[in-house]
Image 1 (cartoon, protein in one colour):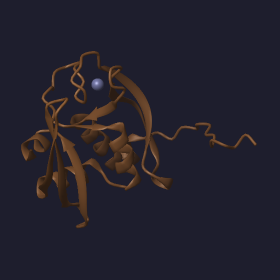
Image 2 (cartoon, rainbow, N blue to C red):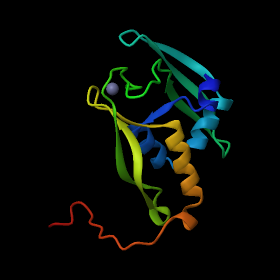
Image 3 (cartoon, rainbow, N blue to C red):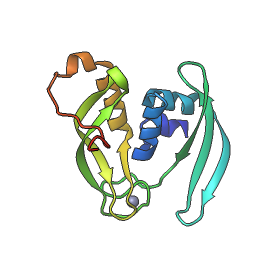
Image 4 (tube, rainbow, N blue to C red):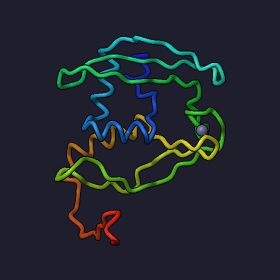
Length: 155
Ligand SMILES: [Zn+2]
């Protein structure tokens, strides 16, 4: 389990990434949670014949957190890590990260999307690269004038 995290053999769904950003956590917080935590619950997904773990751990700021991890058996190219079926594609998307004044965009983020189960997810390598970019964003970003609208502003 810890070995999977250490060696980056995990993926995170877009849904989990959104929750992580909302809580202002980084992927390193989540990784640390796994590396220092313990498994408090094990659930068997019968249909997919794989295990889900509820892990409780400590974040980099010392607070406690719980995360759910799923160890998937497939790590082959173009096989979806979530449902195990073939047909996954890599889409390059522009995504905003951070909140308020710390908000910035990264273009061409590789997101694996699966037409079979509808999930979108990022690999550990991608998540770690995003964090490295976040840490060096002052040097790596270029200020660009982008028109921004707020949904609901038509009235
Ligand atoms: Zn899938």
